[in-house]
Image (cartoon, rainbow, N blue to C red; front, side):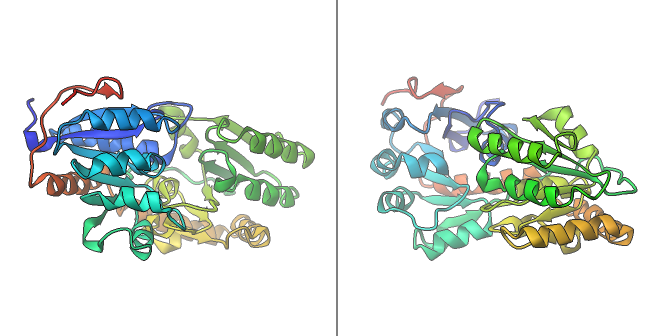
Length: 360
């Protein structure tokens, strides 16, 4: 179908958005927004640029006509600040902020400052932007990541099947999980599957493998690498408890995905993770970097069938309260329409690279 001019947008994203080996919450969010907008009749042209190529971003944006509606992934907005600040004022710029640094640099503030609107992926991130005086609160919308309801999982009688999903890297806290499981080696029967890229922090992965081998747990803790589609669904389907011990997180996408399948969660509760918990009783929260507390909670989980039943029932209720991706897309579309209201950007077709943006 022909998109209306006001429903045309360029989307500047990291070049790894569709890389199956570099899956991240930000990339998944960008994919779902791209596909959701297109399904709603928007014409979305992708500009893919590597994080270390600010010159390509500058060149791409310089070729966009004045008034073009442009959605920018926040990772690039905070790394390619000069290009964003230089070109953003003449464009209809909307920045998608997946997370916020504790102390933004002046250049990052300039990049956010030229945006007509900012879309934060959690109230926690929005609060951080407001606290740092980045923009008028009225210009900052919140579009939480979605989690479409999926098939429910059947709990085992023991609760022994643990699942951890996320890039294997220090900020995701898998080292804390492995340390705690080593302390629980005397508990028979449990297994833990760790799903996620093994390439982001190879030294960290090597240290984890060594710790697992030293504890004699190589037959109980499995690394699968990245899983998607049916293999990922099967991993969730075998889980009694999903564990997410992030040290920093703007939103708990894995937590939301687990609850959308009726699986209880054990989490650090940092940042925006609480916003992903639709039913408080479906989640068990431990203090950040507290292995003793984690040991206590895991032992209680395994020792109490009543506790497991209670958490499972709450997780099933949370499944019914899941935010669908269609709601996320609708908020993003509405925010883009507001930014484009004063000027309709020129309509273009198809995806582009940073080298093939139409020149003015």
